[in-house]
Image 1 (spheres, rainbow, N blue to C red):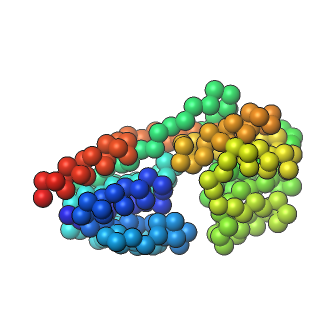
Image 2: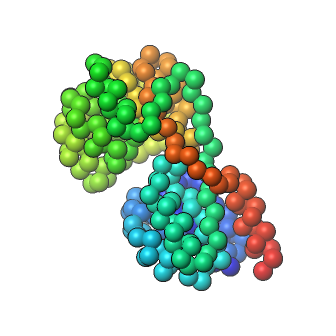
Length: 246
């Protein structure tokens, strides 16, 4: 049975390996070379790299028994295109949901633009852990206040440069990060505000929240887009049931 997984996340990698071990022909689509590097090479798993339109996705999907959308919780446009592609290709679509986190002492914002507007009325250094794609929303702030933590990739560094961030402020590192390392970074750069997304346990949200609490930095969270789907365990069980019925 052929199963397509749109991944780039921990959950997508784990599901792909689990299903391949059970005899499925798994194809994983990731957007970047970094995603392909993280996915790695494994028997029974074919990895395709590159961003695709909904029509291009639909062409790939033909002949597959199931499509699992295991993209990041904030990848709204990607999920929209995957759903449309599944409709076009007449392939069942399943959305894999990452469990949300709780942070009673955080301030939540609808999006990066709203968070940036709030920060414009404040003073103090800002640790941005929202990813390179969100940096344009913060470009209007004093760049000397911004300390973006991005992947050590050309795309990440270029996004920082485009936002006018001084090179000395760029923190190019690959996570996940411990509470201790987050706290050390906050102290090193005298961070007053930590801006993040609710990436769940796999995204190291708890470690960031705990570090902010420990150091006294304010935690600003971009609220997750509302969506519907199933847990990784539910998706895995459904796929295994399909495999056992072959």
